Length: 167
Image 1 (cartoon, helix red, strand yellow):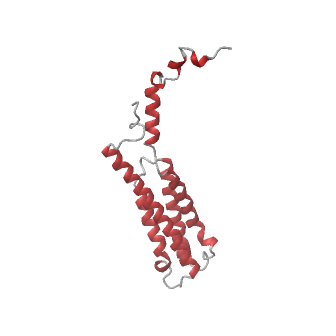
Image 2: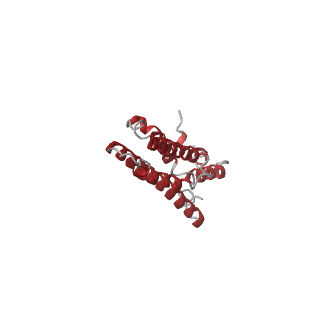
Image 3: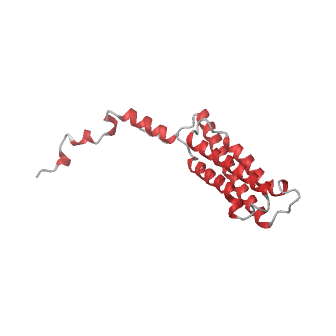
């Protein structure tokens, strides 16, 4: 058997710069790097919204405070819809992160606003404050990442593939 590593035609076969699909591969890699950085947050927003919608039945205050139950159901479904919209059409729904943050603030203050005439229990307060805080954090994180990505695109910040020496 002969050693093919010393064969004169083996060197050009390993040179990627001669590959016929190199421009297309670079363009695909560039698109991948420009892709969304916050896609995991969208699913967490969806799940947090679903929990907020069903939390009156989980924490057992659906019968004692129907106003708070209705508020959590509506706001939770709205946050879940925001998360679904961010997942399904991120280009069109990019600014919904701020709407999620506003919905989270509403969830935080709801135990005191929607329970007029009733006294919220400690479980109701902790449930809404924690869920609202999570929604605010996720909404602000989503909006912040999208703003940073848009600003970087406007400034033409070089990405890893455009900084590659063979480009």
